Amino acid sequence: MFRHAPYGNAIAREGLEAALACGAMGAKTSVLYINEGVWQLLGQQDSRAIDCKNQSAMASALPLYDVDAIWVDEDSLKQRNLTSADINAGKTIDRTHVQALLATSKSILSF
Amino acid sequence: MNFALLILGPPYSTQASFSALRFARAALAGGHGIYRLFFYHDGVHNASTLVTAAQDENNLPQQWSALIEQHQLDSVVCIAAATRRGVLSEQEAKRLGKAGGNLSPGHEVSGLGQLVDASLNTDRVITFG
Figure 1 (cartoon, rainbow over the protein chains, first blue to last red):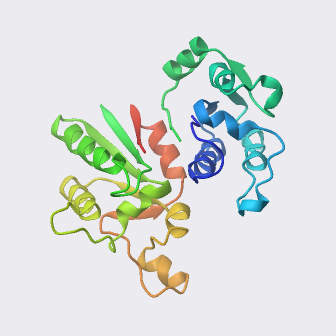
Figure 2 (cartoon, rainbow over the protein chains, first blue to last red):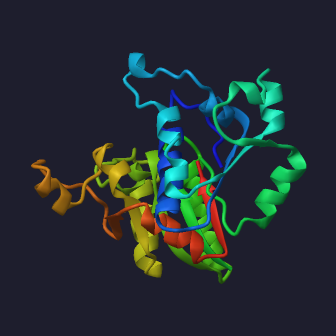
Figure 3 (cartoon, chains in turn red, green):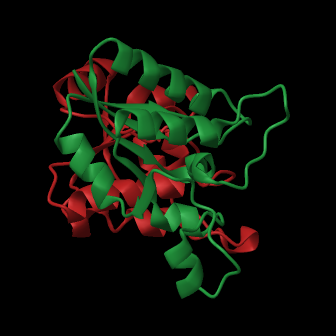
């Protein structure tokens, strides 16, 4: 579960690394972008000016690690005046589906 | 219930690691199990011996080490997150040509696989931070 914007704090990057590790270890993994976390999915990120790795490019590795279930909270997008056209990965779901996802997950790591 | 704790918050800057420590004590006092503590992100600073608290403040790294020793807890500090923040075991310090290690007693450095393992083998992972 990714709750933070991609830059300004290493939590987004390190959360993503944890998700990649889950995939690499063969754990069935779903990823949920929610709240400020939806900013991680904006295309056209260029982080060179702030000497950071490109979060978007790193996230594109998720499917290579068999993390294919990528979900985006629809309300979080709406609250930020974003739509599914603004994001470069994931499928939007409503709050009912978010709740179901959390309720049916064996364990939740929150970053 | 069998818990794993994911500690992301640094000592003193936020309430997160204080809360994690209190949660760990309460869980153990309530008869629950703690499968593993996993220190990640800024949470790795909770495992630094160089942290020095003011006299009238709790020394969080010391308190973590004491809890780990008292209950023989498994505690893992993420090696990648720790190394980039200057928390090193003696072995790592030697390998990297640094003056000395500063990993508090009771912790071991290992990889994110230990976090994945903990999330697969516990009832709940509780994130602090």
